[in-house]
Image (tube, rainbow, N blue to C red; front, side, top):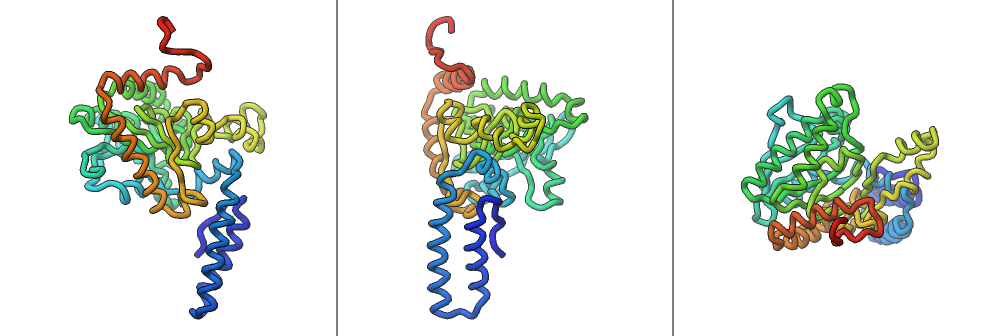
Amino acid sequence: MPLETLEFEEPIAVLLKEIEALTLLPRTDGRDREIEALGRRLVSVRAEVYRSLTPWQRVQVARHPNRPGLEDFIARLFTGFVEIHGDRRFADDHTIMTGFAEYKGEPVLLVGHVKGKDTKEKIFRNFGYARPEGYRKALRAMQLAEKFSRAIIVFVDTPAAYPGIESEERGVAEAIAVNLREMMLLDTPIIVIVSGEGGSGGALGIAVGDRVLMQEHAIYSVIPPEGCASILWRDQSKKVEAAAALKLTAPDLLKAAIIDGIIPEPIGGAHTDPAAAAALVDEVLGRVLAEVRALDSEARLARRYDMFRSMGRLGIDFTEEGS
């Protein structure tokens, strides 16, 4: 069965169908040579298509149903994962997963959003929309990591925080605000990776860290393009224009100093080869985590504060006295 393709991937879909049809035929040298030639052509076409993605096309890639998420990275990069449940106040939010594990022999805490793969799991995970108890659970685990001097690794992938009435009743805005304040002060290394969709305060609620990285085709924005289009144009069909205006791609955010670095993805996006995508994350994560660990506590916390304090202010030198 061919990989699910997106609307703009029509040339890729045609080649995938041809390859699938050939694999159903009896095996011969000629068939194998043709499949090999089509495979080379597939790599070339993917590279050409993905070389010039529009912002809206990047949104589609970031939301791809087969895009690897937190559970995929846990399986490939970490060992001995033990999940932590509950916020000790209300309930266990299944959208945010957190737990201790080992990374290259070092104990770490993992925190991240989980959207789910099939319909049943998506409902269980609330489609990636975290409730206030999820943010409180994450903070409880992070404070435990600080107590035992364990680095925190965060994987962000959410459309937004859950906007339902019960979420508002239980104080979702307050929960996110407390996380922002407390994460700024946590005295342990924090590495944040936007691995898919980084949406609004729902993403930022667990995304304060010493280094903020993005996978190449991930997005990170104050609002989804559809919501922006509804507000500005009163028309969700303007989502393409909204995606361009929001500057939500990794290159845009790196240029604006919102993130610290971009993690490359396999040709055609992480969903085409989750194992290769995880290997690329591993390469960057190991290097960046070592850099952050090498900083003393005071320097690490000062840099974290300065990075977030300077967001949204252009042309201002925050090293000047009184700024």
